[in-house]
Each structure stands twice: as C-alpha cells, then as structure tokens.
Amino acid sequence: MNIQIVDGCNLRCKYCYVKEKENANNVMNIKDFKKILMNYALNLKNRKIFYGHIYFHDCEPLLAGLEYFKKIIKIEGEIYKKIGIKFKNYIVTNGTLINKKWAEFFLKTNFMVYISIDGFKDHHDYFRVFSDGSGSYLKTIDGYKILKEVGVPMGVSSTLTKINCRDVYKIGEFFAIDGIKLISFAFLLPDEKTKKYLPSADEHISVFKQLITLNKKFKNIVIYPLKTLINAMKGWFDCRFSGKPISYGIDINGNLYACHRSRDDEFLIGNYIEGWFDSDKFKKLMFRPTYLKTVGECKNCSVKNYCNGGCAYSAYTRYKNIFRKDPLCEIYKKAFLYLDTLTGGTLF
Image (cartoon, rainbow, N blue to C red; front, side, top):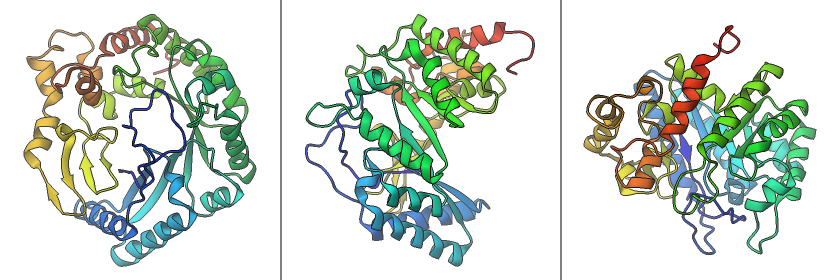
C-alpha cells in the first residue's frame, strides 16, 4: 500500500506527475494515519494475511520530519501487539534531506530506501531541480553516500528520458559496481507535460538491450523494468502488465485510489478514514484487461497475454478513457517480441 503523508516537495522536477501545489507542505494528521493503518491491518487480517507492505511515496515524505516517522513506528508496534500484523516499510525519496540521523533511523527500523537519481550529474540536473532552478544532484549524492556509509538497505530509481536513455548501461553499471542490488529505470507518464522528454520507440528498445547486457554482467542484482517484462512472460504480473490498476494509493486525506499516481475521480474507490468503498467502480477497473483482450484494441495482438493492455492510468492520462490500451503499447510489444527471440535460456 502506498501512503502519501505530505503534499509538498522541495524539488520541482520537470516531469513530475504530481499536480503542483504552490507552497503546499501539509502533513497527514497522525491520528488519521493511525486509523488508516489499523483499517488496512484489519483488511489484511480478514484475508488471513499477517504481513503488510507500506510504501511512503509521492511528494517528498521526509518533509513530515523524523519525529513523525518515529510515531509511525510506534503505531505499527501497537497494531502488531493488538492484532498480530507486522509491517515492512519502504520509502521513495529525492535524497536531498537525508542526514546521518535519518540514515540511522532507517537502519534501526529496517526501512528499505529507494533514492531517485536520474543517472549522472548532467542527466539528473536537467530535470530534478530546486524551486530556484538549480540542480539537486550534489545534495542527492550526499544523501546517497550517507545511506551507504551507515549501511541502509537501498535501491536506486532513475526516470527514463531522452536525456539519459542512451546511457542506461553506464548508469546501471556505476551503481552495480558501487554495491546497489536493486536498480529501477522508470517509465515516464505519457502526458502533455512529458511528451517532449519521452524516449522514442527505438530508444526504448535500445534501453531494453542495454538492460539485458547489464543483467548478463551483474547477475546478482534486480533490474527494472527488465524483471517486470520477464515476469510478465512467465505469467507473473505487476500493476503495469496486469492491465489493472492495483498499485493502490492513499492520499493525505485518506482517499483510496486504485493507482497510487492518480488523484482522478475515475480511480477513486474509497476512503480509509471515512470507511467507504465503491465496489462497482472497483469492478469496472478490474474488468479492463478482459475487455481489451476480447473486444477492445488488444483483441488481435500477439502479446496481449503478456501486457494485458498495459497501464490503465497511462491510458487514462492520454485518452481520458481507461478502456484504451497503454500509449506505450507498441514499445512494450517490440520489447516482448525482442525478448521472445532470445535463445540459450540466459534470461528465462
């Protein structure tokens, strides 16, 4: 479950999908957080699941402050004692606010930290800037080095753009040699804001080829989206290739969205504070891949059972219609077909 605990950020990344709120820096009421977490825990227990995963994602979670996170750990401990549900915490951060106190807290409480670094300085500083337009690379790398020095479990996430797509192998190699075991290259959300930054279909295929080469050299690391593609070909689907929006997210007001990136009514399916759930809308969203593969745009596609129509939110962002295929569909198709031609069993 993705939980947004703040609605502000200290960066102004040019491609960010979060709708910018001028001077916003609100923090979720800790009592609301406790209620949300308890409701989530009860939901897990009712399904006989006794381990929950919490992702602190969207905006910059560290703006909530260290004391707020200490309260979160206390609440999780209380819930475990009361109903037996344990939580594993993950956080996605731009890294610019990390100091030794944060790093020691993450290590002590077993947080997995994902730090957003778009490659090398020229890649990163083109997009990931402070409000005055200055680049954030040096501050982010300072945070990265502190996390490494303290020994915090960590992954690196880079957003794929026209600026860094030709250097994916070099970026991945740099972090792999530096000891990072999880490296992710994230797709941009294809909207009006990002279309000029989107790599072309051929550039995306070049990315996949670079990732395959990287995977052959560093077999002990996890590389996304290569792992996502391979898993889909094995029948193990994440949110993007299930065709369903199942990366659930809760916003600062407790609203539950089927996609953590969305704040659109089309994806609003409930509220964890008020305690309501729209089962009809949920069923409609879950029906999307069936529709696309039987009567929709994917009906005659040779890889429809690999991608299931792709990302519902990407489709909605581009077309305002969840029953359209993902705008990056042709890129996925080329990637799946390319992977399908590989022989020798080195990947599958």
